[in-house]
Amino acid sequence: MTSPQPRIGVLRFPGTCDDRDALWALAALDAEAIFVWHTETRLPDLDAVVLPGGFSYGDYLRCGAIARFAPALEAVAAFAAEGGLVLGICNGFQILCEAGLLPGVLRRNESLSFVCRDVPLVVERTDTPFTSRCDEGERLTIPVKHGEGCWFADDALYDELEANRQIVLRYAEPVNGSRNDVAGVVNERGNVMGLMPHPEHAVDPLLGSADGALILSSLVEAARDRALAAV
View 1 (spheres, rainbow, N blue to C red):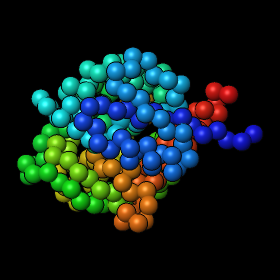
View 2 (cartoon, rainbow, N blue to C red):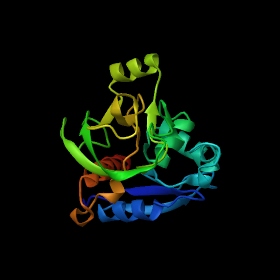
View 3 (cartoon, rainbow, N blue to C red):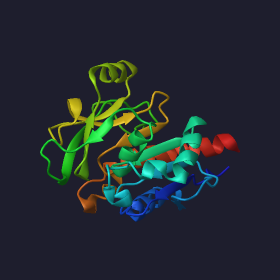
View 4 (cartoon, rainbow, N blue to C red):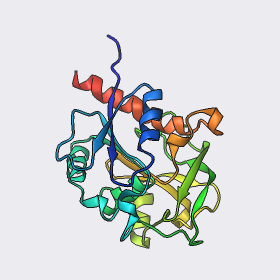
């Protein structure tokens, strides 16, 4: 039997600007990527969902604070509750934290300046649907571009996440003041992940790095397994 192309939805909010990049990158990695508008109250038949980066609703009030109330987020929350794979990139990470689907909060960068550059990351876990193509301790180079990427958790929450191994990626150098250089986390179940770096901008060596493809291809592979299991 031929392996199916997993169907991955890319959410679009007013102000989202990296949706087309995410769609292109997923398609390049052999997924059937489709757009899902923020007003949808029900998701189409999907194997995974990606919340891309950008500036949903102009980042008014607080990054992700308005998008968190979009009708589609209720559908995404229900999808995740059933074990569906959800990846939030940059603004998508902020939205998932605001919606309570991921732990912690994203605050203004410690420098109070917008950061836009390639950054080195260290892979902490490879037993997730988002990092299975990586090696533990592997260093990845993926760009960031954010003004509110400083991830924070209080002592009790941080200790809990460490104990549960929910921290998946760390910056290998100071970037935005994130607590203990956290760059990406998963929920306790492991099927929802958020990260501030943009893997969709690092899927071709011509862009300076193809390391982002390791993240996205892990998701595509896990989504394909989910599609096969449903056959």
